[in-house]
Image (tube, rainbow, N blue to C red):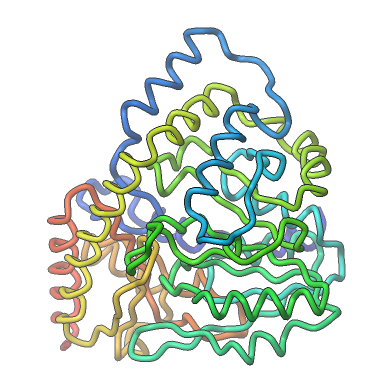
Length: 398
């Protein structure tokens, strides 16, 4: 196999989950998904499609009616004065991760310079690495548990030789979110350098700050249709559809046809019955997503104060997403975060994701941190988890 593939690391989150295999007593907060099932109206649409025999290929770019519904959905979230998004800019993909990989395949060649803002979900760094790119990381900086971007540092890292900038906002794992002014500065700079922007905005709707549209700031609020911008989205988080593997990309109109060719050589198309489920999700977004966001805010506001009150824990509320990213003040006593997460599973029955999974060596920005997915159907489970953490810390003199 290619060396870039051989060098890929096994998921650290999976390693932690494997440590808890077969244990029904473990409280599992390691994966980035809710423990609530997909709404029945979405599941019923897929079942009806299968009963109707829709088991054949679809257009590479997706069902026309779904592309149109996604375009309408995207436009409804845009700020006043934003460029309209037509269905000709939408490509339906087999999940958000597939959307991201397709975008990287479309613009990155071996040896290209790629910049990524970290800490970040590891796939975003692995994907250009698989393509043979040279990935450079610009780290966010924690201050009292809250992560911030040094905009000048990021802009200095993006040069005319930089082929692609990858940025995830709201962020997994930190919850950090770009401001509108930061997006404007980044977009203007990348126009000058000729750099593509790949914006992972799958958590756009899971946003807890005041917003007239109920969404985090998006590059789509500022960009022109032919800007070198690709925005990746997913049905997974905002519609509780992680296992369905359905997402989309917003592209420049001139790029959509070529993206369709890539889809042909990757997956051919997303399954029709899954797209039918996505169409119903789009038609019911005003009832489904606000309830999910409201519940997630309750979960966040349950977990964060309890963590803040725990001895030796440093954490700040996330602006968006579904994660609490925190560190133990005396982390050196416990070893790296992967070892700590494994010990928490075995010794406390508590499943968290290690911060080391979200950093790129030799950058140390997430070493010693832990990620807690607070998307729990029952917030009482979060309180129970904190009690297990406090008990584990108490047993070690904290």
